Length: 582
Image (tube, rainbow, N blue to C red; front, side, top):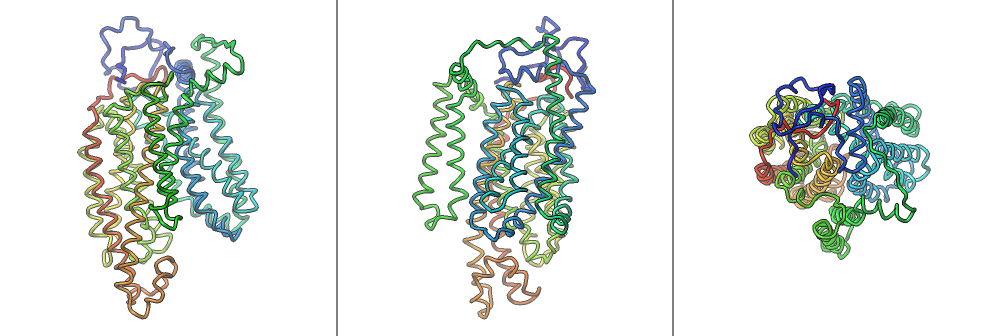
């Protein structure tokens, strides 16, 4: 769908944009009151948020972003702490068998539920979807704090993952709703800036609780923190919605439908058939990438083949439904075929394929090959988070002033990623100073910050405000698919190269311990640095890492093509949002 060009606005409606007077006006705009006109063709949730941004004040807008920042801060602490506590929780029950399967299920379910949440945000409203996610996350945390066995903890993980993912996704939609396309990259980067702090907090917080009151109290603390920090933002949007309603900005919606008619109506508005086909197809397609290691015959297992086939068939049926049969489409078919949208989705998948290839076993590599402690290895790993956030802020500011995102991604982001990964092929092997690895990490992190911001702006620039929530969910979905593919590639390389090279390099006296060394990181680092066995393990790591990095670098050829597919849209002058926005 073609982006809408700014055609001016009502003089008493101020847009928080220091360069608004430089935005070209449409000479055919006619009526100058369109700034406060709500798009009556959009779904109710989109109409409501447009009414809110017209009705609220600049102070309310600033308060909203303060609460968004604080919510990202708490969510960042929670995500890191939960990941750190996970092995201690399962160890407390001395039952690990179910944990990998449930982690896979919660990951896949969390990856596809944002598709449903996108429609909740569009049909019912932003605050409603946000509150729903908050309730699920809080319910999951309560269950995690109170669980008495690993099965209950597994069920809690599903609720927590869906809710936590939904909160962060809803926040990204809020940012898109309350910022101009020109400033959106900068505001998205600002919203994610708490990661500069929270990436260092997970370890101390989890250690403090484990050495003190215990992990249950940690989840109990977040049970209070999450609703306390998320509710004010939802209340702010709800208050300003009623304010807009009093001002007559929201058209009255009186329904005389019966319960059955309402059910049919919402199934139609949600595109329930399309949503089921897409969610089911993606879930069935993703499961084999995680489950194949649990099958004796791997990819040749009948179960894995069936999951893949049915997943692909459902995705094909989804495309047919959206093209020919859907009364209200989940996403317009023309948008699905838009080169910019398609390129953005492919780039998102490429980024996660590459990342999953090179980051797999990275922490273990640092401990075994570079002899770093767990804490020092985590500091090196966090270079990626810190660098990407810092660079995303700079890129957001650059897009604000230039209005261009395609050249930034094509001539800076992707080449820098290829450079960092290419150098890492040489430096991520035995007998190399860890400082060179940190240098490569900085290059890769700056590239990632650039690519992520430009990719989001690209797909949103190609869509109207009506479809912002859906295209962001689809973009995240492609990232989820890319991550699954990348992890599969990394696992295949590791399983195919590391044990073979280990058997080749190990001294004859250590060959009986081959399986233990292969499977256990603790055993690997137990051999003294400089001993024949440790050198053999380090060389095997280096050979496996080299192939992973080659795969992670080669896939960027697809990324280059994806960016070339984009239209070179100049975001200065594109109008998507209304009222008081950044």
